[in-house]
Amino acid sequence: MVWRVIPMSSNFFNMSIISYFGSKSSNAFQNFINPTIPKQGVTKYLEPFSGSFATYMDGDLQFDEVYYNDKNRHQVNLVYCCSKPVEFLEHLEKFKDTVLFTNKKRPSAKWNFYKGLYKKYTKNTFLDDVNFEIGDFSKACMYAFLITSSFSSVYPRGGGFSGYSKDRDRLKLEILIDKLKKGKYTDKLSSITEFTNEDFEELIRKHDSDETYIYLDPPYYKYDEKTGGDDAKRLFWYGSDSESVFGPVSHRRLLELIKTVKGRWSLSYYYFPLLEELLPRDKYIWLQKEVNRTCANGGNNHEAKSKEQAKGIELLILNYDPKTGKKLISNDGMNCLGVSHLFHWNEAQAA
Ligand SMILES: C[S@@+](CC[C@H](N)C(=O)[O-])C[C@H]1O[C@@H](n2cnc3c(N)ncnc32)[C@H](O)[C@@H]1O
Image (cartoon, rainbow, N blue to C red):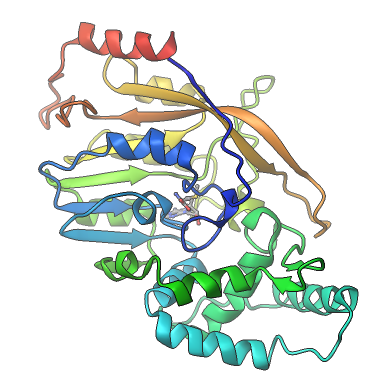
């Protein structure tokens, strides 16, 4: 069955602690992904591609150990600093009174001031300099301004400035500040065992066990039906499409790796043929749902122009039965669930 969801409420982008391109915070995603996450027999929860960590943050999930990880060091640092709201709020107030201070009164003049600052810090070396300790509040303040100002919350260099509302005379950074003040996510954030800035492979190999559950939400493959190629704008969405981070070959690297792990996992993606080749429907469960998503097309004009809604079929591929939580393929390679049962599942999904 394909579910049709039109979730675009006005606060769609304001959920989780911080808006992030590709976030799984909306109700549509929460209802699709979270109920399938097994609770029995799971002690370690891992999101190798955490971003805003929405699946964990907005869901009703509790585990002994919870691991946040992302290759974007600024994002890791920001989420970590959000887990210390009292200290972070002090830094943010100082940041507003100094770096963000302007004596301009007219909203259009303020817009120009903030936009100028955004341009300066997306063009200079700020984003490239990742030689800092996680827990650097001053870096977190500037990155928070940039990511909350970036169109569609893409990597700040990929999106034009949209961080200030002239009508409300308000910076979008204030949304984050409000959330920190209200403390809605404080308990969730402080339940995180460790924040790391590693490649997904390193993290998965380190924590894989029979009691590990891994939710995988990598930068998507955008399948071009004409060329068969990967048309994704990862450089604009997440700041890098180099192979050392997540380039075209990394899809295969990820898929080959998760076929070998002991733990249970679920994987979000859009369809591309390699998925079916490496994770065939007679071995894995494929769930799908039609969703409205915002597409922020990459561009180097640094102006907020190309935002559009597109319908996409979101896939969620699992190596366990979501009803029982039982792994489908045992560690010695045996199919634990009958092939006919799997076909039944996957046919029902596709119908
Ligand atoms: C689709 S987003 C994840 C969104 C997240 N589920 C959320 O709710 O916000 C993919 C993330 O993968 C990160 N990433 C890219 N390459 C990576 C790698 N090799 N290892 C770990 N994280 C990586 C990006 O920085 C980005 O934050």
